[in-house]
Every structure is written in structure tokens, then in C-alpha cells.
Amino acid sequence: MLKDMNSTELFCEYYKQWIDVYKRDAIREATLAKYQMTHKWVEKLAPELKVSELTRNAYQQLLNDYAKEH
Image (cartoon, rainbow, N blue to C red):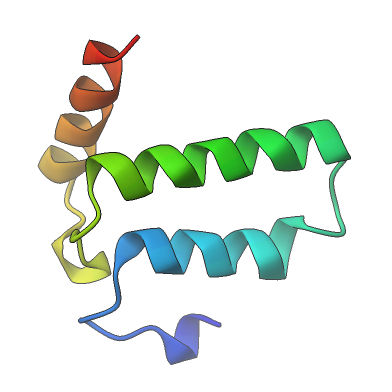
């Protein structure tokens, strides 16, 4: 999966693939639902964020934006 990652891939798409590959059959349904909810928030808050743009500052800003909604 990581080999397939490219600099233009959107983080929300990468995160969804990560859930499907690494978590879907390894966790309970309730936990999977939480990962999927997180994916929806990432899509809402940072729909255009590319994997290559995900820095510590970008991640912190994403957390700050999420905190404003909660």
C-alpha cells in the first residue's frame, strides 16, 4: 500500500485505504465505526489535503479545526 502512495494522493483517500487494508478485518465493528467517523471528519475538514502536505503543523491545524466543532 505504501508503495502505491504518491505525492498527489489526498490524505482522506489514503486514510480510507489504510482502514480497508489494515483495520477492517482486525478490529471490532464499533471500533471500525469510529475509524469511519474519523474519515468523514477528515473529508469535511481537509478535503484537499495531500499526503505530501501533511506536516506537523498541518496535522495540528486539523486537530484545532476539529476541536472548534466539539
